[in-house]
Image 1 (cartoon, rainbow, N blue to C red):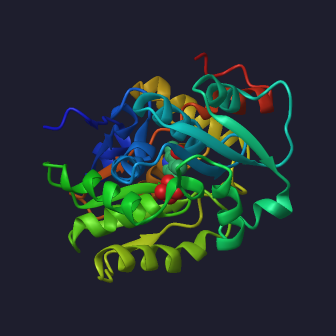
Image 2: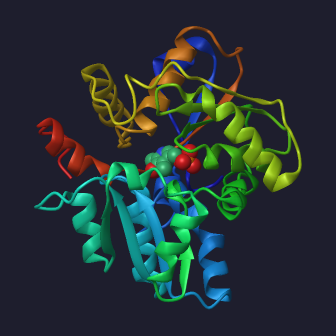
Length: 302
Ligand SMILES: *Cc1c(COP(=O)(O)O)cnc(C)c1O
């Protein structure tokens, strides 16, 4: 059995006759947790092969992706430049302080400039001022990221029926769908309000990577808790109870919402008796320090 697959025991699971294991992708790599490592692996290889020296990317001030790129740069010997949405706020929040400590150079973009981040013109300007740059898009989603995320599934040796994963840009979900090759059923839980847009984005990402369209997946758009990084005490209580019961710390932006949703669907008899579920823990715990500060929480003690 994969060391990263942790079966849960819970009276609800027994009562409903389903099994649920958490795939601990958050423990995959010591410095670069979860799906961000999967998404960067082949990009770092490509950057090395192309002789690039600087990883350039974009993100919000609390972004797991920014933290991961900074850590990867430090570990693999790239300079890193992070373009951050919005104005500089001092002291730096814990995410940006971490990124700085890893050697990342931070540059701030006004919200209107930030909207140009995917424009070729704007990117060309940005790349001009970086030595031998390799560009990673916001959230790190590109075809090589999708390729890396296929391995979440292809490395799984256990049998499963339903695989559940949180979604931001949908790159991780797309990789899982592509890696599953039409087998099983995959549920994506958008962390953003209005996550229906991911239906097309994910379809396009899967198509661009594999040339295939699969039907064995769906979005569960009802578990965003008001929107990206929005705070709700009901969600926090769930995350605390989950931690107390299973010893697994979920994050408040992605995996907490996803597992809340999984348990809610189980309660509603969404899954047939005998269904073997896997929930992918994509990491994100680095976000807790800043999140707890922002909302004045005294939990978790990290
Ligand atoms: C970035 C992130 C996601 C979302 O990944 P996408 O590939 O953008 O959908 C999910 N969970 C965690 C913890 C993340 O940091």
